[in-house]
Image (cartoon, rainbow, N blue to C red):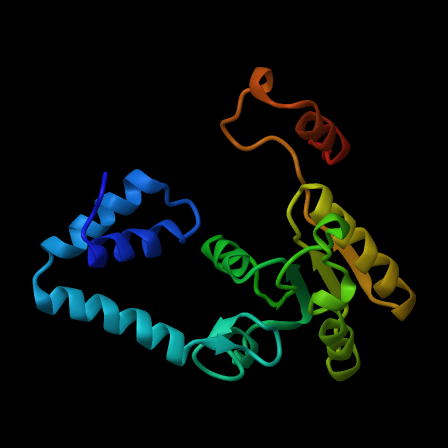
Length: 198
């Protein structure tokens, strides 16, 4: 279907967002057109404010509007433990747990030779620099449980262990409430490997 030029442009911008297909982009564009002018301006201003005010923490490279970020600056956090994650949204997921009290380091990706992502493309050098500046005792690898995440965790472990720091990996396995019959072989293998004594 042909759309008038401004609407077509709006649809294309929505379609460029991850996870948004054509139908959803059209629905969002029409929703924006149904907004009153005040709401549309508020949405546009929120987008611009986020782009202008949010950057990366110079310490952990998480998204922040302050430098250092609130987590790195918090004295009550355990600064001897660093949890290494792939993306800023992984920090948000860990924080929703309300159980981890250490600090973070965001790599901004994972090793993927097929996509041309090597160690120089990640925030690995900055992580190594933190070990000389801070009294770090443990590094927790919380990269994704896929080929790239596992390769990244193993690469970092080989780099970090000679420095005398404890390197651990988060456990993987069956989710709470999951059924064995629907679990894939890799998930079951990880669950067996990471079993604990009762």
